[in-house]
Structures are given as C-alpha cells and as structure tokens.
Amino acid sequence: MNTNSNQIQLLVNGQPCRVSFNRLSELLERYAEGLYAVAVNQQFIPREDYPRVTLKNNDTVEILMPMQGG
Image (tube, rainbow, N blue to C red):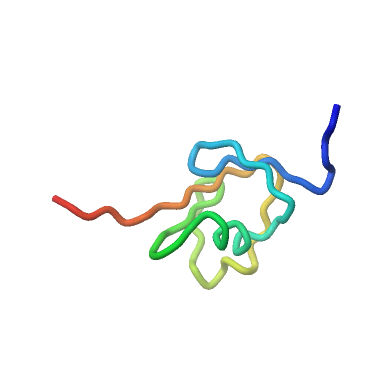
C-alpha cells in the first residue's frame, strides 16, 4: 500500500481530494477564484479566518460561487 503520511484526504465540493498541506487558504489559492464563500464541515468560515483555519483528514469543504440569473 502506497500512502503518503504528509497528505490529507478532503472532500471538496463533493469530490475526493488528496492534498499535502493543511491550511484552508492554501486550498483556496488552488481551487477558487473570484468571489466565493466557504464552509468547512458545514460551518461558514469568515474570509478573515481563512489563513487561520487548519484542515484535517476527512474534512468536507464547500466552496460556493455566487450565481447570477433570475
């Protein structure tokens, strides 16, 4: 079995994702652009807290983009 102990498994917008970092801000640099809101394990995270949030193995992250239309 080939597992890397430096990686954590996340669920990002319903998709499995394995990453080698644990900061929410790093995840957002790679997976989000523009305006968005974020929830980790169904908890809304204020933008100013992004750099302080540490992700753990099996966390669920939802990155929500605004929708236009009507």
